[in-house]
Amino acid sequence: MIDIPIDQFLDRLASRDATPGGGSSAAVMGAMGAALVSMVCNVTFGKKGCESVETELKAVLAEAEQLRRRLTDMVAEDMAAFDGLMAAYKLPKDDEEAKARRAQAIQSSLRRATEVPLDCARTGARVIRLARRAADLGHREVVSDAGVGVLAAHAAARSAALNVFINAPALKDRAFADAAIAEIDKLLADCAVESESVYNLVRAKLSG
View 1 (cartoon, rainbow, N blue to C red):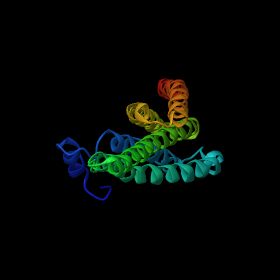
View 2: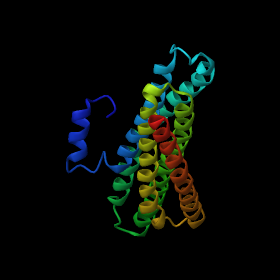
View 3: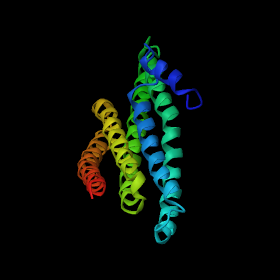
Protein backbone atom coordinates (compact mmCIF):
# COMPACT_ATOMS: atom_id res chain seq x y z
CA MET A 1 0.00 0.00 0.00
CA ILE A 2 2.78 2.48 0.84
CA ASP A 3 4.45 1.84 -2.52
CA ILE A 4 1.51 2.91 -4.69
CA PRO A 5 1.09 6.48 -6.05
CA ILE A 6 -0.87 8.83 -3.80
CA ASP A 7 -3.76 9.10 -6.25
CA GLN A 8 -4.20 5.32 -6.19
CA PHE A 9 -4.09 5.33 -2.38
CA LEU A 10 -6.81 7.99 -2.32
CA ASP A 11 -8.87 5.98 -4.81
CA ARG A 12 -8.64 2.98 -2.51
CA LEU A 13 -9.52 5.17 0.45
CA ALA A 14 -12.61 6.47 -1.35
CA SER A 15 -13.78 3.03 -2.47
CA ARG A 16 -16.25 0.64 -0.86
CA ASP A 17 -13.36 -1.42 0.52
CA ALA A 18 -13.05 -1.30 4.29
CA THR A 19 -9.28 -0.97 4.09
CA PRO A 20 -7.46 1.31 3.94
CA GLY A 21 -9.62 3.42 6.20
CA GLY A 22 -9.36 5.85 9.08
CA GLY A 23 -6.67 3.96 10.93
CA SER A 24 -4.35 3.82 7.94
CA SER A 25 -5.09 7.48 7.26
CA ALA A 26 -4.10 8.34 10.82
CA ALA A 27 -0.75 6.63 10.30
CA VAL A 28 -0.21 8.50 7.02
CA MET A 29 -0.98 11.82 8.72
CA GLY A 30 1.50 11.03 11.46
CA ALA A 31 4.16 10.06 8.92
CA MET A 32 3.56 13.33 7.09
CA GLY A 33 4.06 15.23 10.34
CA ALA A 34 7.34 13.43 10.99
CA ALA A 35 8.47 14.06 7.41
CA LEU A 36 7.82 17.79 7.81
CA VAL A 37 9.92 17.83 10.99
CA SER A 38 12.69 16.19 8.96
CA MET A 39 12.26 18.81 6.25
CA VAL A 40 12.72 21.65 8.75
CA CYS A 41 15.96 20.05 9.91
CA ASN A 42 17.28 19.41 6.41
CA VAL A 43 16.53 22.92 5.18
CA THR A 44 18.11 24.49 8.27
CA PHE A 45 21.40 22.62 7.86
CA GLY A 46 23.99 24.91 6.31
CA LYS A 47 21.96 28.09 6.78
CA LYS A 48 23.95 31.09 7.94
CA GLY A 49 23.40 31.77 11.62
CA CYS A 50 22.11 28.25 12.31
CA GLU A 51 25.47 26.56 12.85
CA SER A 52 25.02 26.34 16.63
CA VAL A 53 21.84 24.27 16.41
CA GLU A 54 22.96 21.72 13.83
CA THR A 55 24.06 19.10 16.36
CA GLU A 56 20.71 19.17 18.15
CA LEU A 57 18.79 19.22 14.88
CA LYS A 58 20.69 16.16 13.69
CA ALA A 59 19.32 14.32 16.73
CA VAL A 60 15.83 15.64 15.94
CA LEU A 61 16.19 14.48 12.34
CA ALA A 62 17.30 10.98 13.36
CA GLU A 63 14.29 10.57 15.67
CA ALA A 64 11.88 12.06 13.14
CA GLU A 65 13.01 9.60 10.50
CA GLN A 66 12.66 6.71 12.93
CA LEU A 67 9.11 7.80 13.74
CA ARG A 68 8.29 8.30 10.07
CA ARG A 69 9.34 4.71 9.30
CA ARG A 70 7.35 3.42 12.26
CA LEU A 71 4.20 5.28 11.23
CA THR A 72 4.60 4.18 7.63
CA ASP A 73 4.70 0.56 8.80
CA MET A 74 1.48 1.17 10.74
CA VAL A 75 -0.45 1.75 7.51
CA ALA A 76 -0.18 -1.97 6.72
CA GLU A 77 -0.47 -2.96 10.39
CA ASP A 78 -3.80 -1.19 10.73
CA MET A 79 -5.12 -2.82 7.57
CA ALA A 80 -4.01 -6.25 8.80
CA ALA A 81 -5.61 -5.69 12.21
CA PHE A 82 -8.96 -4.70 10.71
CA ASP A 83 -8.90 -7.48 8.10
CA GLY A 84 -8.07 -9.96 10.86
CA LEU A 85 -11.04 -8.78 12.91
CA MET A 86 -13.40 -9.09 9.96
CA ALA A 87 -12.08 -12.59 9.27
CA ALA A 88 -12.69 -13.57 12.90
CA TYR A 89 -16.32 -12.44 12.70
CA LYS A 90 -16.78 -14.65 9.63
CA LEU A 91 -15.56 -17.81 11.36
CA PRO A 92 -18.13 -20.63 11.60
CA LYS A 93 -20.30 -21.01 14.70
CA ASP A 94 -21.93 -24.32 13.92
CA ASP A 95 -21.38 -25.85 17.35
CA GLU A 96 -20.18 -24.84 20.80
CA GLU A 97 -16.55 -25.63 20.04
CA ALA A 98 -16.63 -23.52 16.87
CA LYS A 99 -18.37 -20.70 18.73
CA ALA A 100 -15.67 -20.76 21.39
CA ARG A 101 -12.90 -20.63 18.77
CA ARG A 102 -14.67 -17.76 17.01
CA ALA A 103 -15.15 -15.82 20.25
CA GLN A 104 -11.49 -16.25 21.15
CA ALA A 105 -10.39 -15.15 17.68
CA ILE A 106 -12.63 -12.09 17.87
CA GLN A 107 -11.24 -11.06 21.23
CA SER A 108 -7.66 -11.55 20.07
CA SER A 109 -8.33 -9.50 16.93
CA LEU A 110 -10.12 -6.78 18.89
CA ARG A 111 -7.12 -6.47 21.17
CA ARG A 112 -4.81 -6.10 18.18
CA ALA A 113 -7.19 -3.59 16.59
CA THR A 114 -6.92 -1.57 19.81
CA GLU A 115 -3.16 -1.89 20.25
CA VAL A 116 -2.25 -0.64 16.76
CA PRO A 117 -4.10 2.71 16.94
CA LEU A 118 -2.97 3.19 20.53
CA ASP A 119 0.61 2.84 19.35
CA CYS A 120 -0.12 5.22 16.47
CA ALA A 121 -1.44 7.83 18.90
CA ARG A 122 1.62 7.43 21.12
CA THR A 123 3.88 7.89 18.12
CA GLY A 124 1.94 10.94 16.96
CA ALA A 125 2.49 12.45 20.41
CA ARG A 126 6.23 11.96 20.00
CA VAL A 127 6.11 13.75 16.65
CA ILE A 128 4.33 16.67 18.30
CA ARG A 129 7.14 16.99 20.83
CA LEU A 130 9.72 16.86 18.05
CA ALA A 131 7.85 19.53 16.12
CA ARG A 132 8.34 21.91 19.05
CA ARG A 133 12.10 21.42 18.86
CA ALA A 134 12.01 21.92 15.09
CA ALA A 135 9.97 25.10 15.51
CA ASP A 136 12.34 26.36 18.20
CA LEU A 137 15.54 25.66 16.29
CA GLY A 138 14.61 25.60 12.61
CA HIS A 139 15.25 28.36 10.10
CA ARG A 140 12.49 30.95 9.91
CA GLU A 141 11.72 30.22 6.26
CA VAL A 142 10.49 26.73 7.19
CA VAL A 143 9.02 27.37 10.63
CA SER A 144 5.54 27.25 9.08
CA ASP A 145 6.29 23.67 8.01
CA ALA A 146 6.96 22.79 11.65
CA GLY A 147 3.49 24.16 12.36
CA VAL A 148 1.92 22.02 9.65
CA GLY A 149 3.85 19.05 11.01
CA VAL A 150 2.47 19.51 14.52
CA LEU A 151 -1.08 19.80 13.17
CA ALA A 152 -0.65 16.63 11.10
CA ALA A 153 0.71 14.76 14.12
CA HIS A 154 -2.13 16.00 16.31
CA ALA A 155 -4.68 14.91 13.70
CA ALA A 156 -2.98 11.51 13.62
CA ALA A 157 -3.22 11.08 17.38
CA ARG A 158 -6.87 12.16 17.55
CA SER A 159 -7.81 10.03 14.55
CA ALA A 160 -6.07 6.94 15.91
CA ALA A 161 -7.83 7.46 19.23
CA LEU A 162 -11.21 6.98 17.54
CA ASN A 163 -10.21 3.42 16.64
CA VAL A 164 -9.31 2.78 20.27
CA PHE A 165 -12.69 4.12 21.34
CA ILE A 166 -14.58 1.96 18.85
CA ASN A 167 -12.79 -1.32 19.63
CA ALA A 168 -12.01 -1.19 23.36
CA PRO A 169 -15.64 -1.34 24.59
CA ALA A 170 -16.10 -4.78 22.98
CA LEU A 171 -13.10 -6.28 24.77
CA LYS A 172 -13.83 -8.72 27.58
CA ASP A 173 -10.42 -8.01 29.10
CA ARG A 174 -11.70 -4.94 30.88
CA ALA A 175 -8.42 -4.27 32.67
CA PHE A 176 -6.65 -3.86 29.32
CA ALA A 177 -9.55 -1.96 27.74
CA ASP A 178 -9.92 0.48 30.63
CA ALA A 179 -6.17 1.07 30.74
CA ALA A 180 -6.10 1.73 26.99
CA ILE A 181 -8.95 4.25 27.21
CA ALA A 182 -7.41 5.98 30.24
CA GLU A 183 -4.07 6.23 28.45
CA ILE A 184 -5.59 7.59 25.26
CA ASP A 185 -7.67 10.15 27.18
CA LYS A 186 -4.57 11.50 28.94
CA LEU A 187 -2.54 11.39 25.75
CA LEU A 188 -5.17 13.40 23.86
CA ALA A 189 -5.37 16.00 26.61
CA ASP A 190 -1.59 16.41 26.62
CA CYS A 191 -1.40 16.53 22.81
CA ALA A 192 -4.10 19.20 22.63
CA VAL A 193 -2.18 21.47 24.97
CA GLU A 194 1.21 20.85 23.36
CA SER A 195 0.06 21.13 19.75
CA GLU A 196 -1.72 24.41 20.46
CA SER A 197 1.39 25.70 22.20
CA VAL A 198 3.60 24.80 19.24
CA TYR A 199 1.11 26.33 16.81
CA ASN A 200 1.15 29.58 18.77
CA LEU A 201 4.94 29.50 18.86
CA VAL A 202 4.99 29.22 15.07
CA ARG A 203 2.46 32.04 14.69
CA ALA A 204 4.57 34.26 16.92
CA LYS A 205 7.70 33.53 14.92
CA LEU A 206 5.95 34.28 11.65
CA SER A 207 4.60 37.55 13.00
CA GLY A 208 7.87 38.70 14.55
